[in-house]
Length: 371
Ligand SMILES: [Zn+2]
Image 1 (cartoon, rainbow, N blue to C red):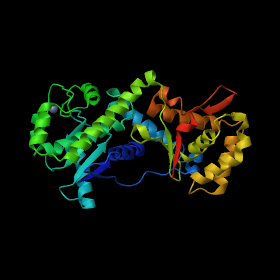
Image 2 (cartoon, rainbow, N blue to C red):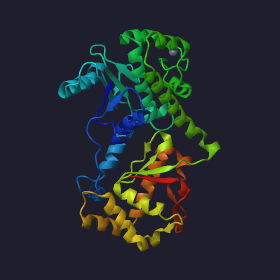
Image 3 (tube, protein in one colour):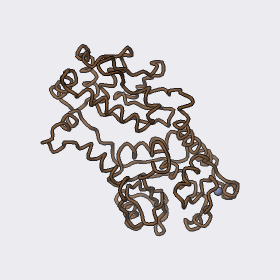
């Protein structure tokens, strides 16, 4: 069964492609399709971020602050009709057959303030709201959003019409996938229990939902629950998870958190690979001694940049009087902390005393490479 994920402009690449990767990390009856490709930031773009007179100045910061803005301030809302206009437009332009499912991931709110909704006019159209999850569920937004999608895909088979589904939903929370969660706080209970109640199990049995679909639903629910609980329990367990560097670009992933990708820019990743290769640590003032190695990583990671741009960046990073390196280390830290929480992130970030050796403390036995 084909499921097309589309998005509104404010939904970041990391979330959009990350949700799709997560939905596919367990095999099931669905083929998920995304639209377009993640934007590839070149070192040149990144260097340009530092010059205020450039039109691309702080482009990335502007994108990030826009997302924060909509989460903190009152979210701009659209009518359901407007939201589903995007689904229908996509169907028409891409020639999507009526039986295929189209799910819009949107940073816009909607009038009754629902997590997700269905189109009453065109079957198989849905939306999922991507913002404000942090108010109800700790951790990465990919997990609750993936849960909404898994639940949509199950309900889709359990009921002939969305209106039937609406009647069957539990107005009082049972920790079941069919909880309506009128009080948004109830979502946290639902994600933790991640279960299907006996009444709903009966409907599933009567409707003869395929085993492969049921297995996918349960395995996804278990996986989401594991990710959420892992972060909460990390304090007690103190057991860092393996780090995987994947592909030619050596993109960092935490496979045990549902292939969670840490989105580092090429320059950040170049710095990260240098420190990863030096478990003994490097003083900021001594990075210049590793200039050749750093330069090799940057050339490896950059497909589009010319040599001069890369060498200029490497020179900046190696200059003792520039804060270019500390800035990259701070950005790397912020990205790991955002996805893993401050405690778990400690094993993966570059840290150390001022003026002393900076290092990544993770046991190198836990670092794996995959082409
Ligand atoms: Zn139920």
